[in-house]
Image 1 (spheres, one colour):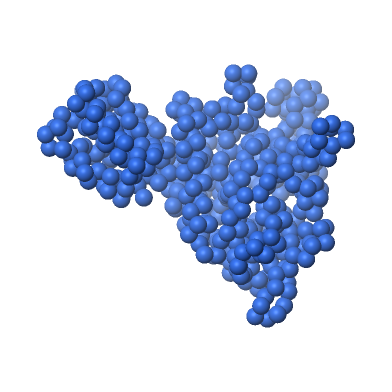
Image 2: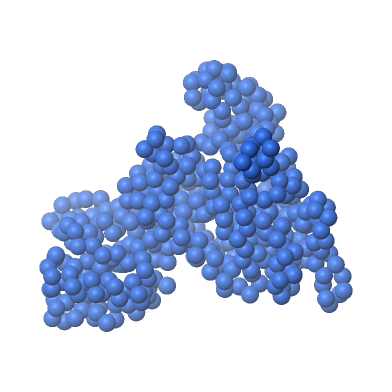
Length: 476
């Protein structure tokens, strides 16, 4: 780890707890079913959280689907024929190594225990037998009750099962999809037949996936219900290596676009023994999380070869080959897959945006300013209109400006006339609003307003008529 990364870890040691508290206090993320005691590893997104989440998804869709001539979109269903998951290998291979405590009956991921207590990196690449040997050798205690009665590790399939039909005994057993990719492969032929596409081309999708996994409770890092932003990019076999490098570059561009700090990102190549059953090459974009979490996977990029199309062709009996007009040949394309998690993007954006700085209030008293330094394009509130005082002559002008900004700049504009102006500034800082527009008594004379920058706290005076263009330029 570099000196810069070590300083970053120290500076951000308490950030996760503070971000979790802020997320609840300000309406970003709430614990699921909290009034009934909660449901582990489930979370709901509040008024600000849903705006931030939608901004992430909309920016991703615009960046990777709408503005690229080689990309198409899809929204596949959550429930699919169970043979899809047999063909894809999920029924056999989509497993986590788990151990049980014989005393308290709690269940834990074996690789997580080994990583956290024995400080062995990348324990997920080890087999259940290897993990069991490490746990026995260290005589690890149960994290829940402390007794040293952990079982050997065994594989546990992470797919949620449900039944189609009124009676579970006679209904059809299906799975909640654990990933969005297979919907793309299953509809690949229909997209070929209905759209005028030529290799190389990609299909992008944003959608829910469900994984019945044991989690270490790191906020929204690993959850039961997740949302993926995923691409399957179809190419000739000989061009897959070049496409892989191009997507590495594109993913680096995305990370810069959402404002993550370069020192918190690294790319890790999977060793041969780590590779998934479908992958020829995989790279993870890892993020330096605060505290004991350390480096964890943020995004993934895999060369899936023709594994999926070939598997579905064999299982379904459908011809999934691509016909190349120029050479009059048929073949199965290879696939490069960039995968982005919405929740992990949300979390890392929050962590990187969070900041505290020493400042003074209007009376010169020292205080700490908490601020979320979102890039403006992601901020859940782009600007706030604040009348200096709750006077009819000011609020009428401020309200008219607010309505104009919602129409001309963004619907994500706030209006606030409660409490003194200093408290309102701090409130907007804490939710990450880039600009505050203050209507004061001078506005009635000069028809201008004061715009305050969140990051520098500098202020400029702008004519009322110029405010929409001024904000649009800085936000978009």
